[in-house]
Structures are given as structure tokens and as C-alpha cells.
Length: 201
Image (cartoon, rainbow, N blue to C red):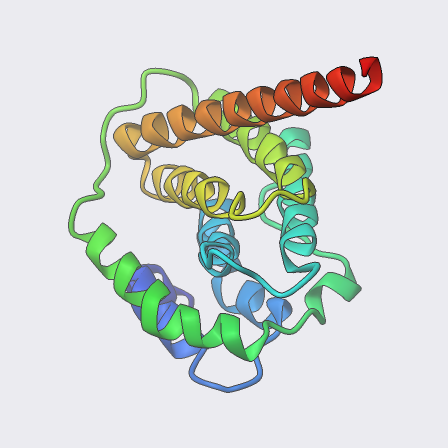
């Protein structure tokens, strides 16, 4: 059974897992955790790519990003989730999005991603990815509209790069992460300037 899950394409595993109407995060982890942190990053990123999420969903997934990143930073071999997070049910809207948009996206990506040389140690790469995911998880707590899509895409690319040891996807993921941080800094500085101007008036 383990050997079969290791050779199955990610898109196939994902499609089979979300075939049911009720899917918990624990079920996804149990099915996919053998493929490592990169796989769980991809699974968590896909629902967040919906431009408008139900209230609170982005913050929940952001918290899961942070939990995952901390585990990578301390060097765990495979992901662990608290019981409450394992019981978290993906909304019907998220499942539909995964089925009709997420799986096709992953299938298209699988055509282009392949192992490409990494010029640094795997542990350093994993920790660099963890820092990026940590920052993106914190970003999802900001109540800014449509801000979840780009961080989700960055986590998706980092997850694929980590899973397939693909330096090109990792580089693009890091560039997107940097862009998200710059957007946040610019947005906060703009808001600060507006409040400062109003206060001065």
C-alpha cells in the first residue's frame, strides 16, 4: 500500500481522497503524509486560492501554515497536526473547488515539474521554505480582501518544489513570497500615512 501511494501521481491521490462529500484535514494527512511536508503544503494551498473564502477560513489555513512551518523549522520528519486541526472539515465549497479547479491545476503542473539540481543542503532548503510558509501564514491573518490568492500560489509552488526537488519552482515560490511581503509593507505604510494624515487634520 505504501509503495503504491509513492508512485501514484499527486493529482490521482488528491482526486481519490476528495471523492467523498465530507473530508477532514486528518483524512488528507493520513492519505498523503507519507509524501512529506511538500504534499501537505500543496493540499492546504489549493482551497485558499479561491478569491473570496468563507469568513475565518483564511485565518484557519494561515494557522495551519504556521504549525506546519514550525514543525519544519524544528526538524520533524513528517507533519503532525493537533486533534482539533485533524477534525477540521473542508467546506463543500472548498471540496468542489479542489475537485473542479485544484486537481486540474495540479495535473497541469505535473507536466512541467521535475527534479532539478538544488545547490544547497536539503535541510537548509527545508528551513528556507519553512520561513517562507511561516511568513505567508501570518499574512493570511490580515483582513485584506483577495490577499489569500497570491500567498496560496506561493505556498503551492514551494510545496511542489520541495516535493519534487525542483529548484525552478522553489525560486518562483520565493519570489512570490517576497512580492507578498512587499505588498503588505506597502499597504500598511499607506494605511499608516492615511491615518496619520487624518489624525493631523
